[in-house]
Image (cartoon, rainbow, N blue to C red; front, side, top):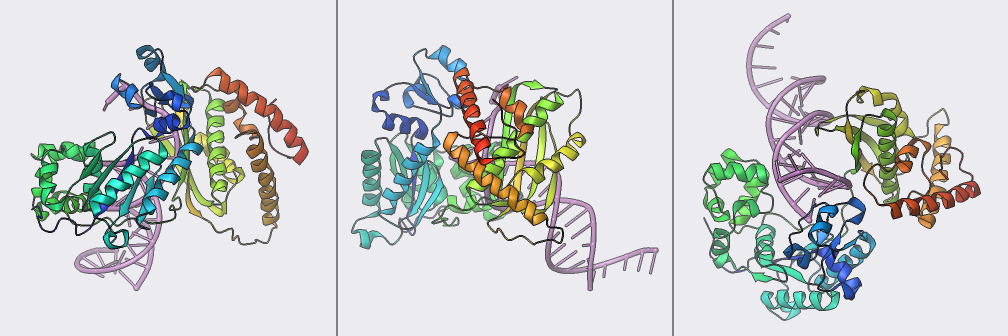
Length: 434
DNA sequence: TCTGGGGTCCTAGGACCC
DNA sequence: TCTGGGGTCCTAGGACCC
């Protein structure tokens, strides 16, 4: 049943940057305005594209080689997360002028709870939404799509309603009109599995779903879908996660290599590199992992892997690599073609607290930790991965995965610099390539 | 959807305990 | 050794998101 009472018992705003990465590139370099801009050069596939590029048929994850055929004068840029993240911060700040209750949902999206802010801001919810959009567009030099509705799920419906640069306000008494025109698979949280099941049950639009009785939903679906059902009926179910970006529950690194490989040594070094990279990220966030999993992905997209608990929380790869080296062959099958490896670090904590054991191992761990402070400093200076483990050598030296020549030669230069730095800080066990 | 990378949350079912 | 009932914790895997 659709509620049709007061228009905004709760006023939830959703802000979505249009083609965010590509738009940041254009904002950074206005000469790109009006051109076909695509980001994702380092991955070989499109991660974001300007509306001009979209109009000419570029879609997400499309191969760059294909895009070049389609649009010879396309501008392809590597992702620059530092810049995107600065724009992202500015987006949050602008929204925060109107309320402290801002959820930094992702790099290009946020939610804000405007409820109760009409008096302090001396304007209606509609006026706030308009003003926020105007300030975002004007101050950041790109467009945003903004939605205002009763809760997160319907605010998402609103911001998606018109893109790019839309501003859509859905008061409670009009909600059913919007839901009637929204296919069920477009609803946030309803993925391909659930939507095809729903369609089989005769539920084609968001309104069809909203109109179903609670009991019907409860009998057929798990909690998340019952919650979506409530939100589509106008209830406020999903609270905003306000403030500090939540800590990670896990950190993972995976890399696909083309062509796939049967070479044990190569596959192992790919995994080693992923483990190193995951640990770099771990340290960047001052985190420690107490468990991890590693896996290999075969050419036919099957996964096999193992997971482990560590006796101590770690932030450096040694302990993990020791276990992986001992157990790698329990997973690796000779003759199989592998296309990717991956690692997931779990049970993360900030606590550096470690129990000193009786065998003085903590001393060794502290030494490794100090060495890595030097490694991280060197990498900050000379570029990511300037210094890396010997076991990752082949992954660094045989970049079988996509990546153009310029990147590799740049990396080589860094390696030489890294070598000098290594000698200066005296790293005992790291393999560094010249 | 001919498949890149990084995340989160939920559930069912087994293990184990009283 | 069997039966019954109930609770908790953990894990694997599914589904979804950007």
